[in-house]
Image (spheres, rainbow, N blue to C red):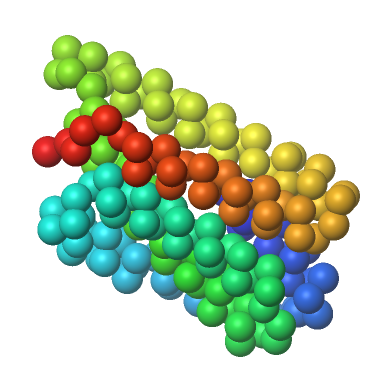
Length: 162
């Protein structure tokens, strides 16, 4: 959530403005489809926990590559990679969540986790805006660190779910 909210400010700080911002969004959102397809294709083969951890870790890496990128083409590629992996991670998370709870509590637990995700997404915008006051890299580093922590948590799930 936070990356897309402050992407225009990041692009502007890196010298990208006007129509090029919309081109970046177009390519970035188009990367969602292959990201979903890849996650769907490998989740049963590699396992949900491994795919979720891998997608989150790759998302963090893509954010760091955006931070290091110079030039519009590299910025587009790194933002597209970020979305490619983030959407795959979300899709895998939607598979893992209901399977992680007993049947009797599944609907309530899944709803509660979805509520937490929505609140977190809403909080990402003002948190990112506050971090922008510390510099353009601050939100990227914070989100990459959070994604890395989530990847570690996903890798440490107590059991592989079916």
